[in-house]
Image (cartoon, rainbow, N blue to C red):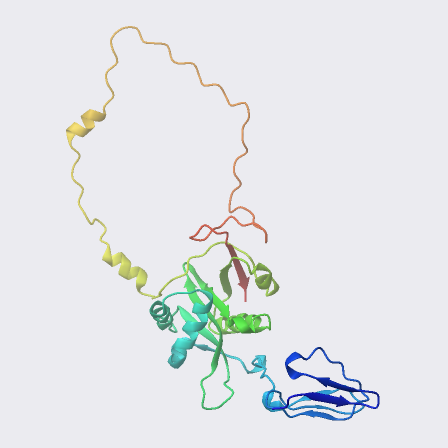
Length: 297
């Protein structure tokens, strides 16, 4: 192992102990210097230049982001081999038991609800695609041309690079191709992101966990018109509720009318209360403020 480092120039000679090297500034006038110690990567300083070259074998590798143009959007039930990777992506944002998450993803179907994955091609042909995003689409009660967007997430390392926009734009194309004309969603803190995509504040809707055209008729047949015949009311109950007779004698004068209130409050406005991007009247199940947004596509 090299025990000392000697730099020679036309002016002076400097010898440094490698264990206690201070910060060193090299003049461009120095001749070519090569460090070949086993404790250092190969480094070359060219004469007349301050350019520093490192051995590529010792350079750290940079993680390249997927190309936005190569991303695809595919239903999770069409790629069952990616269920585990998709579950890991969602659980990174919203921790949940793996079995429960896989069960929820396994309910995806063309009949809705439907889970979509944003995929990037793998670096090698034999490897599986990389799951970089996810969103779930559900049908909306009493709104046949609407879909509810839920569980929108992008890989943490890729956020802020346009993948969220690419995912939402892909959802719009996917929904349009199947005859839907409006998307609904909720958010706690991403109002500006969705507003830039054209979403506006809206009203709450009810997403359907499962859908079937025969569902209403099935429910009606399950409950008969008169499930339990009512028992006739007993006379004793009616008698107990009758008002007692007034005693005989002169009737008492009626009580004086109640005084009118000094101030009257205005009637409440009809319809939902107004919203803004800073305040909302809606809350989630935990009591946190939540914003409902929608967009015509």
